[in-house]
Length: 279
Image (cartoon, rainbow, N blue to C red; front, side):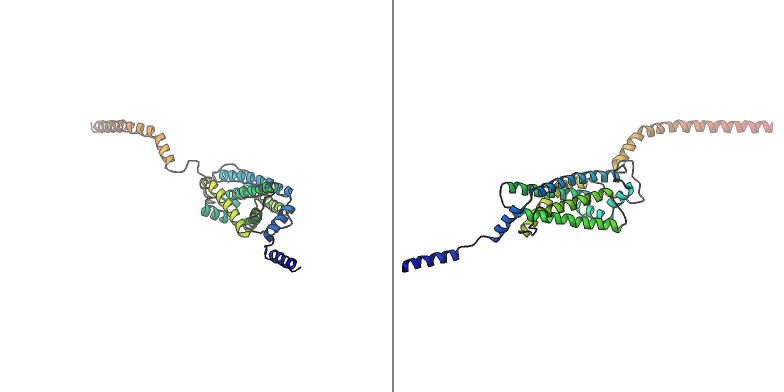
């Protein structure tokens, strides 16, 4: 009987010393079970549409700053151009090299990749962290950008129809992500933030070259120039005018000789007239 009691006490001590299940793993399993793939799929579609819309806005921004015709929805075209040339937009482009539409495309790339990755891991029954935390951070960043940019345009008293469409897509994406699961608390905040920041940096580096090629905002009183910028336009115009200049230089000595001959004839006529008057 004593031996049995000793065995029972040893088993109880081992069970007490054994580590319990990780609470983070339990929460991750609960998130995996409660995740709605339909909502995540909708988020992927919305991010793709937002990316195409941001690319379209970027092209219209380039056309507007080069003096061409561009699309601005149902409103006036000058309203969109004024919103695109707000001081906040100019500061963002000057500091980062990307216009606001380019940053929208960067956000779309990250917002598209993360939910798609989460869907793949859900199908394979893998852990969703830190992907789910990165998705939440991306959605919150989109909401913050809508508040900042929309507030700047409202403060200036300007409305851009295409920008309103962008805001609607971002808010719909955030709603789809928040509806994807009932567990909205991010479990791995630091790793999720690093993952979202890494994706943003990668997309930024890919789009930096076309961003640097995007023309800056013009002044209000400045008119778009029809000639290409730089010294090449001057060289081209000089090349086109060079044959004419040479022809004029060749004609100058002949014109001078003709002028001198006319002056001699006029002076001879005057002498003749004076001689007749004296005679």
